[in-house]
Length: 120
Image 1 (cartoon, one colour):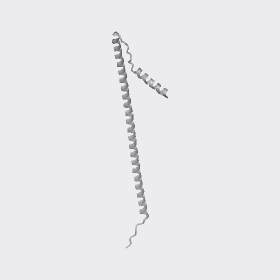
Image 2 (tube, one colour; image 1 turned 180 degrees about the vertical axis):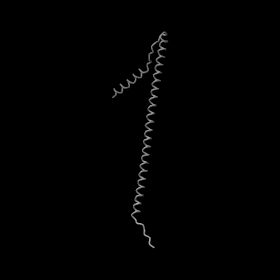
Image 3 (cartoon, rainbow, N blue to C red; image 1 turned 30 degrees about the vertical axis):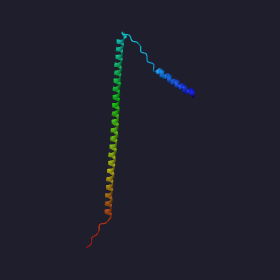
Image 4 (cartoon, rainbow, N blue to C red; image 1 turned 30 degrees about the horizontal axis):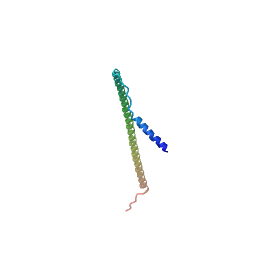
């Protein structure tokens, strides 16, 4: 166990010392500087164009997704409205049928009871 801890601590010190060493930069010659600057500018421009295209594609994709989501939400709303209308129609039909049944029953009851005979 002690050897394991000692190894881990030694590893931490080694990585800390390695991480603190400065990175070496290559020396550039004055003649290569303008060409390197042009190349770097061209690369930066290319990267900027690529990022712009990527951003534009992302915006389009988000717009399509939003449009599909809006259409789905609209479809759900329409379906709920249709369901509500169907329910209302069914309720109205049931009410009408009940009213007819009551009227029919009253007619039958009225026909079953004879009219009272008036005698003087």
